[in-house]
Length: 288
Ligand SMILES: Nc1ncnc2c1ncn2[C@@H]1O[C@H](COP(=O)(O)OP(=O)(O)OP(=O)(O)O)[C@@H](O)[C@H]1O
Ligand SMILES: [Mg+2]
Image (cartoon, rainbow, N blue to C red; front, side, top):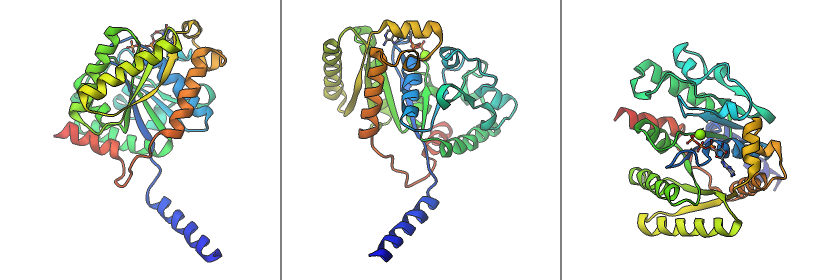
């Protein structure tokens, strides 16, 4: 019995040596702008950290990024500097509250495709380092979708779509999901209903929306949860403190906690039979 236990332990050890740990890459997206992606990305990241996960928040809203502003910080380096000064990813990772790592978007580079081959290779190599350092890497994307944005989304392991109950936001979220699914039907899609006037209204909107998506797009999407419309969110944005830290008893903070707890219990393991899937997929898409 003892020998069996030891053998199993040894096998586990050898297996974990063969496959390096790899972060799950998650894109936070929306159709319409201003629906609450950045606030969700930031507060969800912090909630994962409270659950002892290692998290990197990567602001990919280049030119319009504001993750550091939401934390009252000013990043010294950004992803743009990584290319301009050929820095390592370790040089551009900044530290936020409670040990959150983040990379700021900066402004300048507007097109990943315009980077030369060496710059792209540099990015792939650096990203391979990143995935081994974290449990989760979250991309805060810009609103809507550019071609390069789409490639980053399609290369992710999962995407979380943020919407609110307004018809305009729902229609655009639907369009976004359709676009992603048309390009990659196996992409796991999660939906968050933000700014619900009441829990009841949130449930109704979320059920209605997932019903329409399932019926017309023939895809299974996961309801991730509801975040109420909460004035604490606006106050926290003005004070430049993420709301899960500004007021952890607020309705919005409690909702994020529930969303993160459920997510950690229910989300699926990613198949890592072939390593560095993000970089592999991105390369394939960009170089095809
Ligand atoms: N749950 C909420 N309750 C109340 N207000 C909210 C909530 N979520 C977001 N907001 C408001 O919406 C504003 C926009 O949020 P945020 O910047 O996160 O959106 P975004 O989707 O990232 O926008 P963009 O498309 O410009 O990147 C916030 O500054 C805040 O005032
Ligand atoms: Mg944003």
